[in-house]
Each structure stands twice: as C-alpha cells, then as structure tokens.
Amino acid sequence: MVGKTKKSLLSSNILLLPSPMKDFASCFSDHAVRVADVSCSGHASVSTGDSSSTPVSTQLHSRSIQSSAACAYRSKLTSGKELLIRVTWTRSNAGTGSSLSIGVDPVPCNDSSPHILRKKKGTRTFPMATSSGHNTMVALFWDYTSAKFGSGPEPVSGFYVIVVVDSEFALLIGDTCEETLKKLEGTIKKAEFKLASRKEQVLGHVAHTTRARFRDGGAEHEIMISCSKKCDDDDEDSPPEEVLSVSVDNKRVVQVRRLKWNFRGNQTIFVDGAPVDLMWDMRDWFFGYPTTGGFANFLFRARSTLDSRLWLEEEQCLWHGRCHSPPFSLLVQSFRTPS
Image (cartoon, rainbow, N blue to C red; front, side):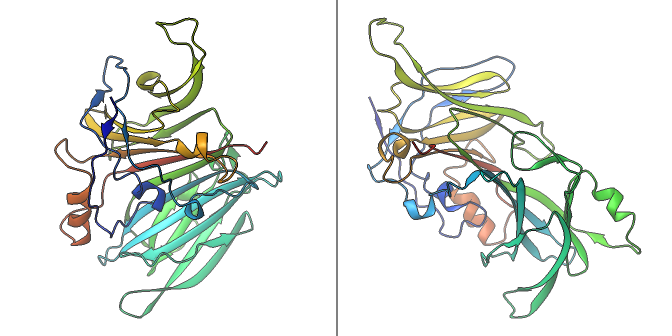
C-alpha cells in the first residue's frame, strides 16, 4: 500500500539548498537501509504527495547544455564573517568544452548573479554587498588551460580556482593551488571552508555515476543511479516494467519496482554508520514529457543524527547561529533527450 506523505514545516531560511532540494520536504518515511560491510537491498517504501510537479520555471535545463556540476562552499573568514561561494562548471553541446562561473555572497545569502568567466585563465575583482551596507572587494583567480577532464564537466586535475575576500583566501580548490600560492609574496590568511552541497545536471542518461563524501573527514563513496526494464520474477509472461536502482560502492541499497506508479518516494540508508536520506521524484520524467521537458530529481541528504527530523531543527539552529553549517547534500537532476 502506498503510504501517506508526511508533511513538514521546513524553515523558510534554507541557506544552502537549491530550490529543487526544498521541494522534497514532504518525501520522507521511517524505513531505512544500512550500507555497511554487507550489502542490503529491498523494495523501497514509497510516499506520494499530490500530483502537482515542481514548478518547471525553476527546473528546466537548457538543452544547449550537456551537463553541469554546481558546488556550494561555506567559508568562514578569521574575522568571523561567513560566505557562500558557488562554483559551477558546465559543458555545452556545441563542443566548446567546459566553462566556469563563480558566485560569492555573504551569509545570510543575497543570492546574487554569478560571474561567468569566459576565459580559461584570468583574474577578476568585484564588490560584494554586505548586510551592513558596506561593499567588500572580492578577487577571483583561476586557470584550467592545462586541466584534464573525466566524463563530467569539471576538471579532475591540472587546475586551480582561488577566491580572495578581505585579503584572505576564502576558497582554494584544484591540485595546482599550492604551486600557485608559492608564487605569491607575503603571508595571506586562509579561511575555513567546506563543501556544503552539490548539484549535478545530466542530459538523457539512463545510468549516472558520481562520487560524494557525506561526512567531514569521511571516505568518498561512488554512487550509481540507474533505470532499467525488468520482468516480474513471479510472472514471466508480464511485460517488462521500469525499475529504479541505487548503489553505493557497488552495493545495491534501493530498488523500486513499478516505477511509473512509485515515481516519487524516499528511503533512508546508512553510509559510514550515519543516516543519509534519499528522495526521488520521477513524475515529470514519465508524465511531463514533452510539455515540460521531462526531468527526474534524486536527492541525497546527510543527517546529523538518527533522531533529527526533516532538517527543521538543524535549519532553525543554523539560522539563529547556534550551530555549524548543515550536513552535506547532493542533488542529481536528469533531463530527457529531445526526440
């Protein structure tokens, strides 16, 4: 039986999650699958809400873009000032390679427009408005002219991206950062920063593989999401049906049959001994195409404790400054290829 959706009053001040992530708030259950030394799998318990889909205006992916990866970093300067830095890599269908854009905002976030960096190497400075009304200067340094890429839009080696705020390194990513820093004279302070969330967008993939680290200092895990057609084991004469499978480190942790019926649902898995909530919404993939383009959302969201409920306590605590940033979240959006 399809369970009723559990409702939640999430804090309206969710700082780090893209809007598609927030729409999964009603998609939770108490069922769990543990990912440890043994492989666990089973049919997922499904919760379905109303039939309305996520607003297409916030979901539609430009079909000129083949794939994109957007990472949100939370940075805390030595002065105590907190920043949200968004780094986005995109790969187009035009064969022009990957492009980079960076956005820097104070926390609470102003959600300003990102700066599109059209050259593979360069520097840029710009003012950032703060809540006090004073502008802070931001400097960007980047170079991926010799970068090596994998199957995704972001480089895997041979690059650096550096963000300087208030004469302090607010973000350092890339394997050639240290080499670049040695060329700079003087001593510049380094802020504390961590990856808060990641959003990947892919076009027309039946199976998608990515990697994520859900805990600070934890191991990086390989995650595979795939959709296929399988016959019912109890009725070999039945037509094949869509099946969703999710694996972590080659261990299947979630399997959803009758996917056209169970197009929206949730499951809790355990990674590194801690709970991670997995939510999926494939309604538009099956029933929205071609009107809305056809897309599917898959959200992985680490939980600080097993008893924490629907992020509400964590988000309120974060907003009032009583705790650190919320746990890591990963959103994968897959868009159907136009016929």
